Length: 95
Image (tube, rainbow, N blue to C red; front, side, top):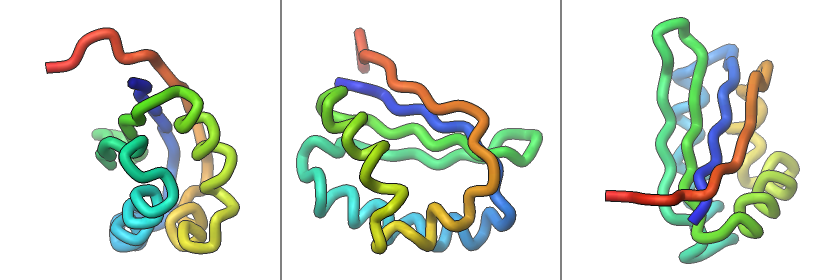
């Protein structure tokens, strides 16, 4: 499994959150069981973290390339102003 971590800024966290369900539906539709879960968080400084668990690194990397230009995800990605960091990591243990 692969963990995807993205740290970014948004101009409107309410609009970002409102568009999140549509993005998650699209991830499930497009990647099936390879999309495991997603968590959207707000840090104390107001920045946003997105943590997605994928079944494989290949799928995580493919989604990172494909989703920003996917019409169904445009509303979500349109709320992102600055991306500070994006990483993928192999999951060694989960409980």
